[in-house]
Length: 149
Image 1 (cartoon, helix red, strand yellow):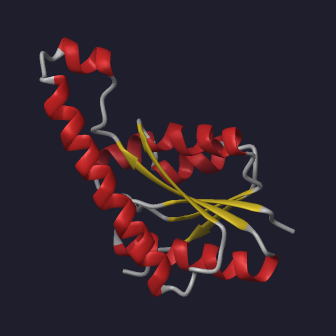
Image 2 (cartoon, helix red, strand yellow; image 1 turned 30 degrees about the vertical axis):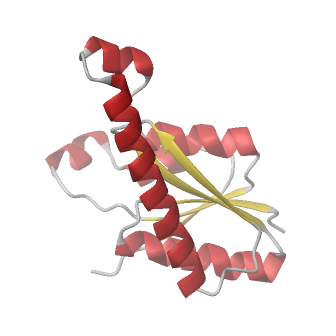
Image 3 (cartoon, helix red, strand yellow; image 1 turned 60 degrees about the vertical axis):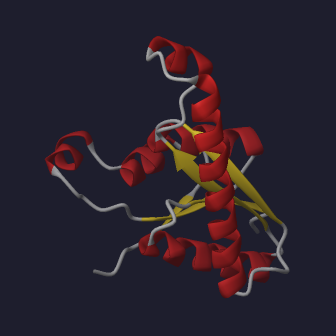
């Protein structure tokens, strides 16, 4: 039924619920999973130059952050017995609400599994949450796993 599942994660406990569901569905349907971790702080070369930030220092910082994030994603998958699934680990810069939709289209995902990000501040009530944006913008179905508080 689903051949390619995109599962964005911010590596917080609430995202683990979505990763667990994606793994269970991948086992059931024989699906591939793309696990996506987005870092808003990743800047492109132009942004770094405009801020007069040392390009080499930032590259090193991004590389270390990426290595740590990828290791953490692999640890989560291992804890949830997902080692036997075809999983691609993808790290990306940008705004989560846009990046998730763009990556889903780019990789041809036929399902996005994500946790609710919750309404953490007043801006969420005015502008909406990442989850709301993805639901309204994605070209494929979005399975939202509620966060238990």
